[in-house]
Image 1 (tube, rainbow, N blue to C red):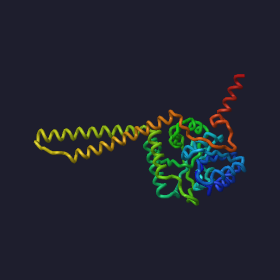
Image 2: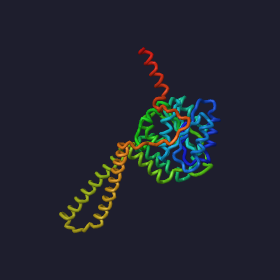
Image 3: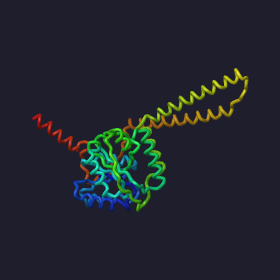
Image 4: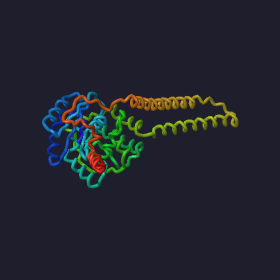
Length: 325
């Protein structure tokens, strides 16, 4: 269980205690990743980890966003299945069992939650709709699949996801890059009882740029096609002006047309430069080994990296050693 925590002092304790009660019959761990919260979330998470051995806590030095915090949790989890759930209690913890049963019965690599009615604000619902539409076009996502932040992932797929070491992880993009064996299950979605959504317009724009720049080359192809269309239009317009002057003997200034073409061309030029700047910036951050996250403190966390805690991997390694003896 991985829970990214940000300014959730009003909900995190209730969420953890509910999870411990619901998952009492399961061998589970709860990893809380505090993404440099500005309220009292860190102290509350520390208390929960000290009181319950099932609760593990990681505090990050710098706020890097939800996906980076989730990536940190995935790098430290050890379970056969890993559920990712938000800290706002809008997803009832009991629904995790529904996702788990779906993943096991269908042998899915990942199972996403889907909702009959989403209890988000209009702004958040509009952002989710746009994000899913972009993912359908840019990442070849199935149109009927809703990319919810509430999901459960198989251990083997977690190993593939954490192999990504770039500074801007997008969990759903990494999932779609690694597997097509994806399921979904209808679960409840409750209204927010405390606080407000941490997703601002700036964070949504940043998420879209990560999706466009880091996980798809279709944006570059779109710019190329736009450039070709602009060139074709300019050639056609030049041919029309030549025809008017040569055969119709008309003298038109064409100032309005030229002004429109100039403004349109300058706008496209700025867009192209902006895209290239984003690509170069991401390349530089990767070359400079910009970290996905920086850890300030840990409680109940094993020092062994997650990639060495894959149980199936360990079993295979032991069998090879025995056969070689």
